[in-house]
Image (tube, rainbow, N blue to C red; front, top):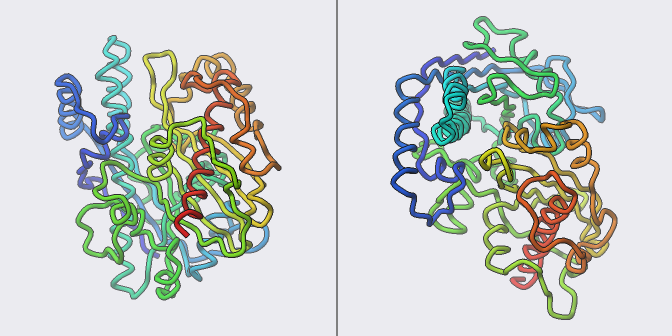
Length: 418
């Protein structure tokens, strides 16, 4: 079995990625202070950061109705299982990446010294480093697969839609279960599923010898959503670069779905959205991913990026999942909302600090318009302007309205194009 340990990986975070994570729009002109802090964070990490990556091969992969078994350890992630089955995967690589605990310790020191700006820019740079390390690990696996006449599939991680983050501890234990060297740095999974140090990520990359499957099924081509610049093993261009021009930040996959024989999502009268069309268009391109299941159901994943209302506006990211049945007037069959993998900003919300379990359960249990047609979102009465946090029900309804109207706009635009 192959085992890869890198204790000094190259870190070259693209400026556009860092700006996106900082929360700046692509065309925003940063102030001198922001540029100074960005340069400082880069320079500090270049001198003090301790990044690392680890990957090992798992050949014993079994899939059945109960989920996936990796070396006889069970996991339950429908999207990951479907990708592996479609590609006829022969095995997987388990990957761990971390920015190192020195960054987390320094960020904590800055916070305690009353330097929130420095704290924020360094924290966000740590997130950018982890994303970059995961991309680099994927590129390295692609290089190995190319030599073997195989293809590597897009990665998936606990906490992604339909993979309970609570299984992260089990995955970490599995990663360290075998292999001659093991993880090069300390990494711990908390009971909640979060990792410590928090600027870390665990991922599963499948690989297959059936390269024709990967070429034929576009959702199995990692290149289409990979922003690793200069990769010599790229099979196809990044879909977002081809569709919307130069990448100013990571854009979620957005593509139209052929709606053969489905009921129209647009009513015959003029559609009236509560959100400006310009915003809907941008969110559909940058934050929305649409996929069609084999049974015809449409899966939509929306990435919401906001900030807390207190604690100096901590950035936070939530993932929304919606499943629609186009054969039944785009009726909403499934709904869920949860913090994005690796997000820590949500832990600074007032209600979370008071009672984290209560707020988390409230967010998870709220499924507005479940069982109703998607068009019901256009008639849904809710607060027009709500805070950016998730503390109050009105705020959460407001965000669900954004998500559902964006999905409606994307599908309506598809039908108009057709």
